Image (tube, rainbow, N blue to C red; front, side, top):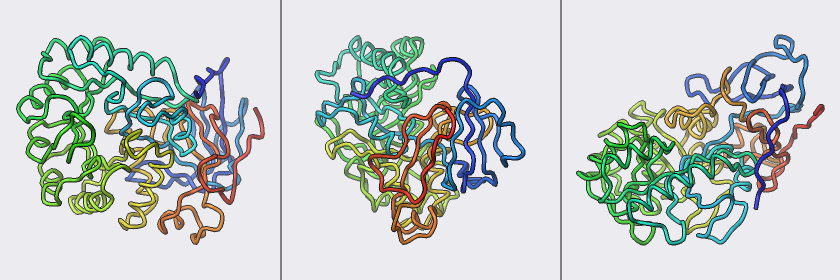
Length: 398
């Protein structure tokens, strides 16, 4: 199993220089005119040209050698269980493998694959608090997993949500994976959750696991969750007219997942662009699941939406970074001063038909990842999962 990431000893100052392309994660300005990032004690303190920023006293210097830097990718929809192990696929180190796909942050949509998952109120709360505590204390290879997402049942009362929030739980598991599948009950419990600062997501589409069921547009719209989970189905998508009704009938996040219907993902993207609501679109994998673990799932979604959805690659990366960070109220996902220094250094893959990273993604290729950085600390170098890049970064001082 991937080890807990070691904490830095003493003050740190990271300098990443010779960046060929800097993608901000911000839809309003996806490309930054800069070649250097400075981060101190895990947070970005300067962005600009090398000659204009203070690089003195660096504890780590990374030379990007002309490769691109993006914010760390965020997987908005995962189902963790215990550390870096998933019983659904009996697989170890899936979080570490996702790090090698550029993912530095994950959001739990419910710990539903926990063996013998409790359905009584005491057990539901105990499991959520345990998951929240354990993933806060254990970060596989440094990846940040925001876990502890209870799956609601009819027996829950308002005070249960108050207790969960007081214990540090900030997420609801997918509404619809438990006993609550009707609009009125979901609406009541989502309101209780929101009252105490707990963000909510709803399952959308046909059933995905035993115990789940169809959640159609009427339930989604009445429930009023903060995020419409896998609007392109997990796995089975709703008909196009229902997807359009959801997009037009609320202002919630529109989550597209790797383990869903690709055609429906492209349809949702088109509707969101027509509405001028591209900022609502966020990306996840919905793994580990029946289709397995997808270490490159977020990169694949970026490539899919750019190449077949006619979305500029620099904007497609925003859906996997800044959009999710803002919707999920995270301190990462954007390259801007004050944010967590979670970064990915990547480049066009060798022998791609595209001459640059952005051209290659528009053609449907995956980039090659050369390094991931979390909280200003290098967590991995050349990816074991992506194709090899044309240019790789190097650590010149540590």
